[in-house]
Length: 381
Image (tube, rainbow, N blue to C red; front, side, top):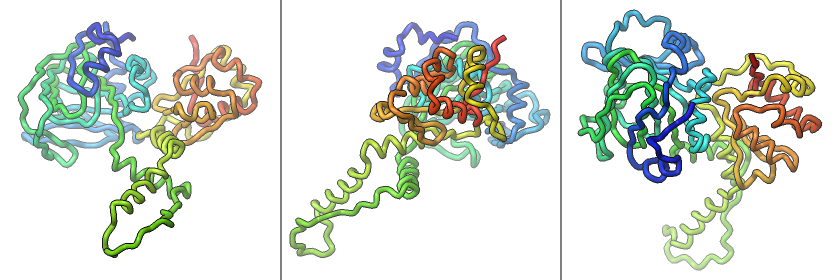
């Protein structure tokens, strides 16, 4: 699968459009094929671990329901949409779609969302707070996009935040293989013209509020940030109720001193590699041995589980630190290329691990991760 951004290079796209303005990408994917069928999608939405929802209109009122679902017949043949989040956690083919957008780092990735809609189906006019590439699969959808502005939002349903009517700056019909890129803040509304599927690759970052809240928990859990202000050079105070500019500066510096690069990268690494949705992990740990890994990988490559998040930081790579599924992992010195392969590559071949087969630390760690379901062997036909 190859991406063509209207002839633009990824650098040009990032410079001209990323987080700046919407873009219609005609035939971004040539001969695009749905990543799964509507029946397979409905099957996923039956599963308890899969996050799904249905949006429809009944008597002119918007409705939203959350899965799992076991029936769709009562919805009829018009005006409803089925949505499944984190498709990349469950369908390996979604990884091929994600790779096309790897000019954006994976720490920015939210997930791949799939929607199936019948004629008239949609989720209503709304504004997203994240970047999204809406990739049209089978069928056709009409999209209207408005400009940024002070648009009034309201709850059309407790689970649906809509925006007021807007004047479109884009009014387009997407065909299979077309893509609509939307930065945050642009109101948009998609309505299905015939039974169709679309695959949305979304990128977002956490709010400062969420990050600070999680950071506070991290400081408490790790018993960090216990230092207090020292002020042996304190001048005489004439106003006991006053917090002086010097004192405010001390308070601010106390917070800044706590947030050094090591703490921020450790916290961020754990935070950013937590999956927001369930992963398709085995209920019971597998029982591979280290020697099994070396033997099997000669015929079957190791594939990273869809949705598993692995990251490393520039400031700690030389220390051989990486982060995986909310945890920190540290190797002994000299393992930087291994960490880069683990985090940058979805598939590990025998050649990728050949230098490490005699390293007990590496093989024990990889075996532990295979037994946890983080990597699995892909059968080669």
